[in-house]
Image (cartoon, rainbow, N blue to C red):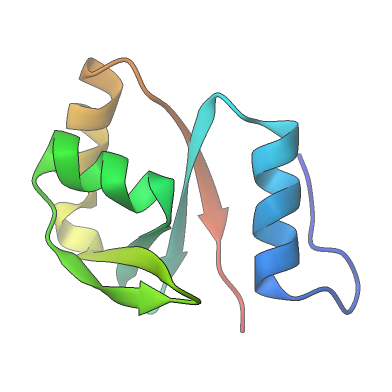
Length: 90
């Protein structure tokens, strides 16, 4: 398990997660929604038909209500993806 680095930005922590667990799709739970960023957002869109919500630092972002998370996670797992469930703090 990897915790956030003290004083590190979200982008830096996301980079660390991806470096340590390259085979996983990190999904972030925050405020009743599940978020995916960058290439992970593209994967979630392709597999679970989740609509792109916008951009963050030039990368695509997908956001789905946590009530739809179970269905999206099921589709990702069935497609062979490994999931890293993360808590997003601000």
